[in-house]
Amino acid sequence: MVNSSRYSAPIGTPERRVRADQRRRQKRYFVDREGTLRNPAEGDIAIRVIDISLTGLRVTLPCRLKPQTEVEIEFEGAVLKGVVRHCQCLGAAAFTAGIWLPECDPSKPETLDPHHLRVLRDGTELEERRNNPNPILL
Image 1 (tube, rainbow, N blue to C red):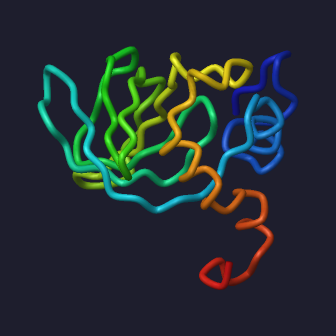
Image 2 (cartoon, rainbow, N blue to C red):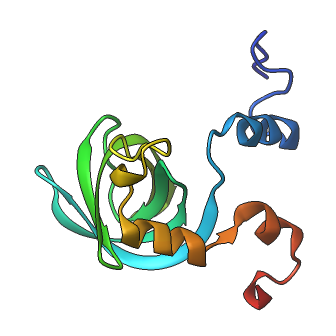
């Protein structure tokens, strides 16, 4: 069990996950949209955007991406440039990646893609989804 002075709870415990949520700068919203991820090394990759915020998104994809890889995400009419922050294996040929969108600055509305904003508006806040026993009904 690893316990450092920065965190009061061990990795993987519910208390630790709550702290991670509290550190977020932007609210995340659940979405389920198909898209394409482009990067020079892998080419075009079919993805699913599973959650989104003003400054980032989380996707599922069939291959691992290295952190700090620059990518372009296209979905629902939006084309967003991002940087892979992390990528984790979910199972055989299934990964999830966090993508930071450095060009999206919430304090400068002109940097926000209107399609990106529409998807945000249509999403369900993740906290609402966690509290609903049947998220299909949202």
